[in-house]
Image 1 (cartoon, rainbow, N blue to C red):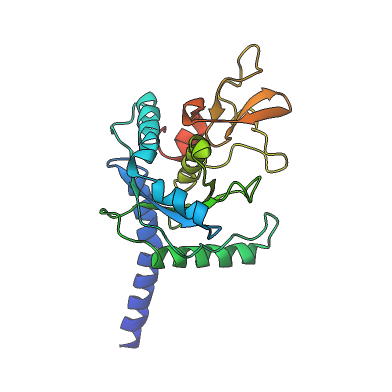
Image 2: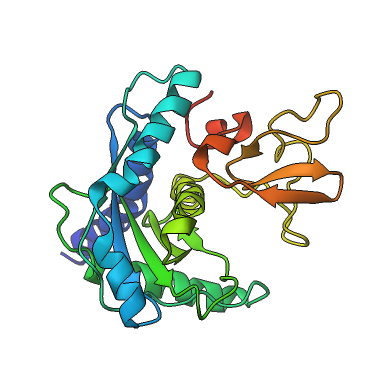
Length: 255
């Protein structure tokens, strides 16, 4: 009996490890669309942000679906709509904030666990089972001149996205959302953490163009368009970005 219990225990442990890996493998095969649930959060807790969130509709996020469809077509992916977005209800609680960039590994592990638990507890119905959950934290532009970096996890496919609650920032907001969405699918940053500048060559759309500067587009995981060797500007719209080849490999679009 004791031997049977031990065997059963280890079978459960192995399955707990292998099943998420199998699920991740299946997702990155891109045989069906991935459903992304977007949950607005009033990060400042004020009426202006609330009013902005209440004005959002499903159609405001169609550009995300169209962007991923157009990029998938460039890579000849055999699926017309690889990403389907669903705007969910407002989530009242704010997801746990990540530790500082130079935080200890143990702190990062604790936050990762807390964030995933938050995701299990806060996922209002969006009509379909969500493959990815992104919490859109909206901030008042009158109170903030810049926002902290957003964060997303591949484990749990969950993201915490900092955005401005202003219609004039909507296009840039969608660049940030697309960037974090790709993080949940194992895409890595293509910019330097030291200065936030695109890394050559993987952070450049045309690294071998002559002349190389200024570049005309941004690699989505760099987020910025290189203007000179040491300067760049933020992409203002998704149509100023592309999914580069390295990113495409990371998310399973290229072998």
